[in-house]
Image 1 (cartoon, rainbow, N blue to C red):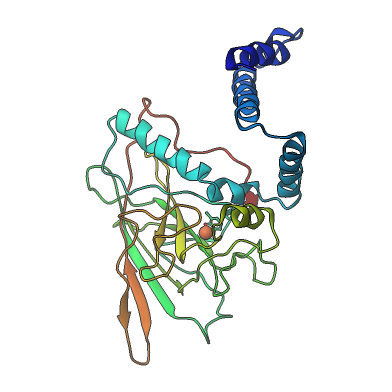
Image 2 (spheres, rainbow, N blue to C red):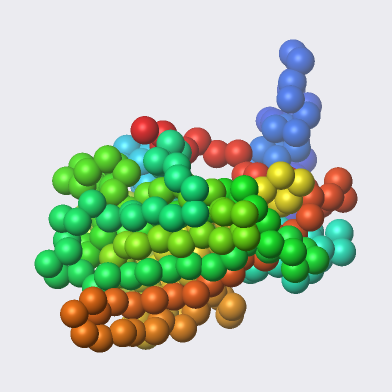
Length: 297
Ligand code: MBD
Ligand code: FE
């Protein structure tokens, strides 16, 4: 079949046969995606058994609740970030801290405190390196922002996240810190390890077929929000990690790899300084608040 013939067929199936009130945006998107899928089937001569294999794969992915992991793994979440960067540049917004993907492991409702928090519950203190991280939240003009919210979450020494890993205590390694009058935040935690996709899961199954690994470098996630400012979703990576520039989720970015300072002695610890620079909210740019189903505890 030619692409023109496919377009006509798909338009008939999806749009022209509508006899009831429809959602035009959904029609538009499904029309396009079905057209592109049928053209791929034609061009690549994808066999029926292969189509069903693909549908069965999606069923497996859903049964494992892994679409939130598959999306970064195939670059889709990174692609949305690139587009968000372009939209902001087009609206004249520049100079903020680089965004990077949220990933699937945020949980709403973490304990909130002003200025400082300890994130870890102490259960890994014997093996872990103590980490202090601190900095200031700034507005676009370089003025500190008091009362900004810094939501932070990261993995434990196994690369696992509380809530999803039921062996951890509630909200372990998750907090919301409100910046103080000088716009500062500070926390004590443990140095995280990198995450790896579940080896028996759907995402890893596809990565294996593609000849790719499913590892992330050690990292710390942030949502930074303040009145009249665009929500910042970002992460910092821990310098020196073997996967630092080989992240299966493509989230490593220039500007998100702060130096780690180490102090020895009786109170040995690592320390990271990192400031956040928020962009002014403007009507010309699409919302930086991404609506998606998130866990809450
Ligand atoms: C993670 O911790 C993560 O941040 C992403 C993007 C995907 C899987 C696990
Ligand atoms: Fe993560």
